[in-house]
Image (cartoon, rainbow, N blue to C red; front, side):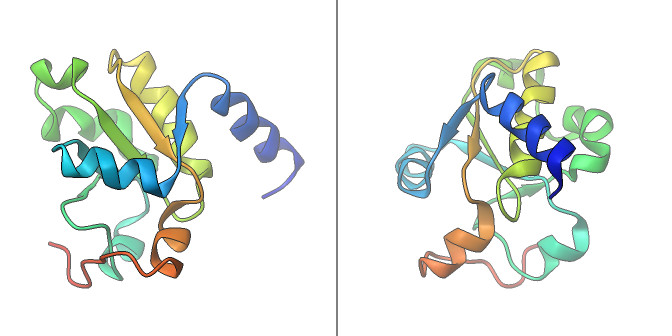
Length: 123
C-alpha cells in the first residue's frame, strides 16, 4: 500500500469493528455470514469455507444479489487478502445500511498461515 491508501484504511478502521481471526472463527461457528471481497481470481485460489465472493470493485452493485433486506441487521464478516479492502468494504456496507459488519484484520493470508480451514475449490 502507499501513504494515501494507508490513511484511507486507517480512517476506515475508526468506523468499523475490526476483528481478529479467532473472533471470526467464533462468529462463524454461530452462523455469521462471511464475505470475501477479493477479486474472483483470488477467490478461486482458495477461500474461507462458506464465503460469498463479492469483489470490492463491484460490491455496491452486487450486495443486493446475495443479501436480503432482512440481512441488514444480521452480523457479517468481510475479509480480503490482508485487511485493507475489507475495512473499506465494511465502511461501504455500513453506508448502505448494513449495521453489523465486521472487518477481519490481517485477512485471508494470515488465516491461511495460521493453518485454518480453507476451501480450495470454492464455487
